[in-house]
Picture 1 (tube, rainbow, N blue to C red):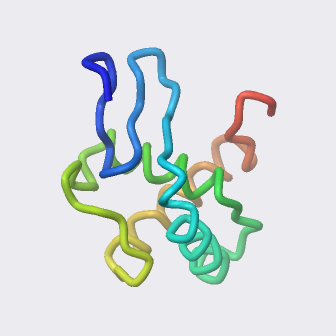
Picture 2: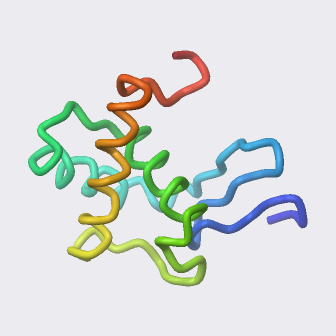
Length: 99
């Protein structure tokens, strides 16, 4: 990670230009979180929504930058549920640069 990047959680960082970097080792955790969040949000959640929710939660001080993500963390799921719902309310679920 360079000096111009802010670590959100281990394996996810954001550059000063707002570009998120996600370590490939987090793929399984992100996928598991995706599946977990579909139920409580009642929305078509995908991995990009999970990543965006993690970044937003981290930037808002809701995640510890030194605490690894765990898919079996109920507090994490609750936090991300709020951010995913906000993403859909604000952006209609469009979170990527292609949207």
